[in-house]
Length: 180
Image 1 (cartoon, helix red, strand yellow):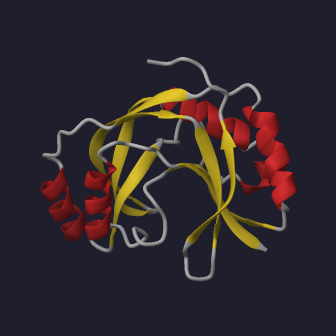
Image 2 (cartoon, helix red, strand yellow):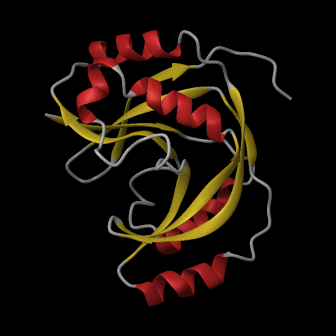
């Protein structure tokens, strides 16, 4: 069984700012690049070919789109304590894409909590063992006012290896359309 995730790796000109935050606060910073998850980690015996065929079908009607990050927020819920970088522009595209990906062969891997209302597209900047550490990190980063904008042209399927490292299995381009 392979552990996989389907995600977007945004190509921001100033991604180093995000890298620095994640280096301080995200235990996965050295295992996977900054990303936005479309299909959360799942274990399956699906082949690369089956995944690729599913992506071809889903992405045949999906165009590239503009992505702009929004605010840094604190999340403290039963799933954990996190710093999330929310998405300002591109939220609806990400939600639609994620919902489409969870159809067909990936439907059995959709988490019970996942639906259009509860899904908050984001980039994780940090994961914390206590509320105090979360609050301190938030104070450290909430003054960052840089703008992070890019065009999303492709998505990636990663395999998470035994060391928790991200190994890219498949990359698929979105249809290219002219977006400013």
